Image 1 (cartoon, rainbow, N blue to C red):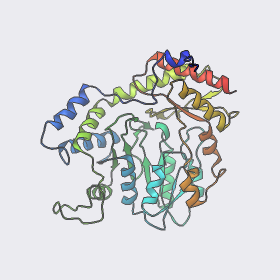
Image 2 (image 1 turned 60 degrees about the horizontal axis):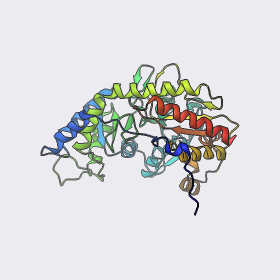
Image 3 (image 1 turned 180 degrees about the vertical axis):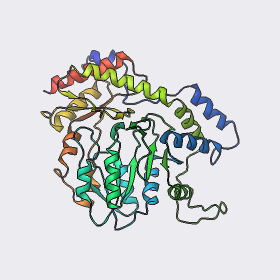
Image 4 (image 1 turned 90 degrees about the vertical axis):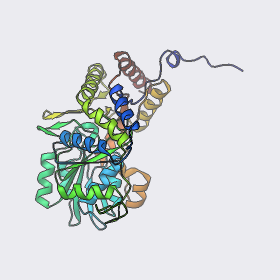
Length: 385
């Protein structure tokens, strides 16, 4: 039996993960204080976390929950969306931004995206409006904000609700306003690959008292404030624990530091990738201070989806974490079967989706790791082409 000689690239370096949370003693101590106390849920840490989040978004209310998906569902219900309604959203996002519409019995209607920002195109939104349209859900893709001033104008003109899916953009500022503060409600998400984490968690943020009040009830089994076994409405168990909230509060306190670290990594990537002609890096509009969620590059238009996938395979074989951010939602099997979508429905989103690559990205990446990722990416591109 002949043993394969290991490739030097397979043995010389530790694998580089796609993402990694940034946890310090501040977070560990905060969690241990909760674990050493008598209250693990429905306690003061949740209220403290919510206050910090509301301040971050520049709004009156934050309602912390167990995931960004739960927060989206509550935002949709807060606008009274129901069966028979249509909600316009983007096909280029994580699937939760569309699934939440279906949870309420409504129909997601997709509108194509802007070629530069990869966020939903306001002109496409306006073309998609019908008499059944009830709301718009726009996503701050990869941390870059949608065109919120235009979307707010469109929503006002047509009497529509507007939800900001800011799951990927905590800390982003658009024309002087913080992410989470646009529309009727916004949401944050705190999965471990995000700018900050609670392990699992999310939050609805809003200036509207009615949406916040309903969300607090719905997240807690529909309780109405008259006792633990009194349920005013059909609700859910979307609660977040004090353990997760304590972790989140510590992360919010460190958010400027966390964002600065991620920005420095992105700048280093940008500098090195400027020398790779086949790659297009993240566009940032001049009126945007972007909070980096992931670092996604696009191959130029000469590359096919198959070639992109071969590059991903080569990178993974060489210990470089990577992914295809994002597959188009409308081409997922369920959406094709349920709504009849097919390739070609949203050409800009599909073209970008076929050529995008998420590279390893976390705040404590070293220059050596970044350089290695760029070298391996360049080598893979050369091999494929």
